[in-house]
Amino acid sequence: MSKKSSPRKHHSHEFKAETLLLASYIGVAKATEQLGLHSSQIYQWRVSTEKKASTSEREAVLASENARLKREKAELEKEIDFLKKAVVDSIGHSNTPMEIWSY
Image (tube, rainbow, N blue to C red; front, side, top):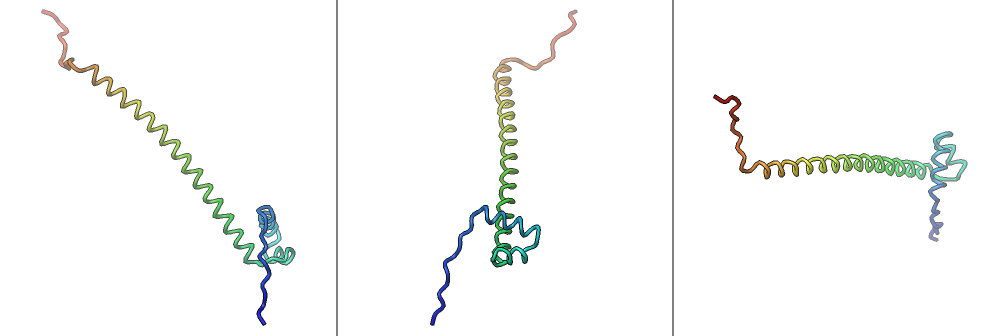
């Protein structure tokens, strides 16, 4: 006779967060006993949460770096425009020294 498995339970994000908090205070073993869960579930939820947190931190760092680079690009574009105007304005002018003293 085949063994019929029970349907999987889907736990809410709030339940998982509270379970992880409980496990951090009393330990995974006691939390699993109190909640009727397998310790592997709690460890898997912990790894998943840490991975999401590190991804969020990395995204924040990259967003900050992206903003800095955009500001730097804008400043460099202003400098390029200024230099282009300076070149256009200086066409036809020579850079020879001027006579300061007259004889």
